[in-house]
Length: 219
Ligand code: BG6
Ligand code: MG
Image (cartoon, rainbow, N blue to C red; front, side, top):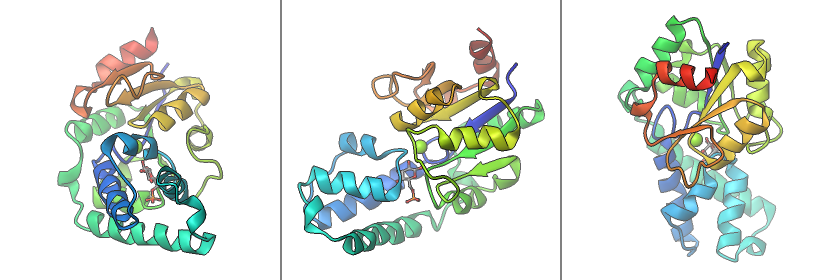
């Protein structure tokens, strides 16, 4: 039986994936590195420092900066990102997600967040959803980021639920891979092309219903 649903945060519960994109885009521009939506797909779900490294490698500039300078660049991006999420409110929850989360909760299924972001608690609090989750696991608590399964396995462990009784929901390819490596059922939000490893992909959050995913999971 389905006992828990473990949610990615950025791009699943709220559209902060767009803000990460904007903040990285601004930094790339300043560094004279080409940046596109397509390239940005590779940054979804991975940590801040890993994202920066990918951008620098993409621009052929990885060796131009020292570790200290790289930390500074990552901080600049985060300061910009924090300004963008400063005005987040419950109105920024993606379509259908609030209803879905409340429905899951009412059914007695446990809920967790498994996020690669160090800003996860701040974001979920601004959305007014923090109390709906039994467990929040973020980049501050884990060693290995997605696609490593650690963040999903840690969430399941804290919920005291076996991975096979969990569904994970993700918008990033790295996240879907992490869910599958954790031995869970994976729901992807986005395009089939990027999320091909998921057990089921929905184009948008409005398409996700508890009734249907419970049925898919049972088969
Ligand atoms: C993930 C996002 O949730 O968090 C990534 O998908 C982001 O785009 C990562 O880079 C790290 O976020 P933060 O807030 O710690 O810089
Ligand atoms: Mg995401």
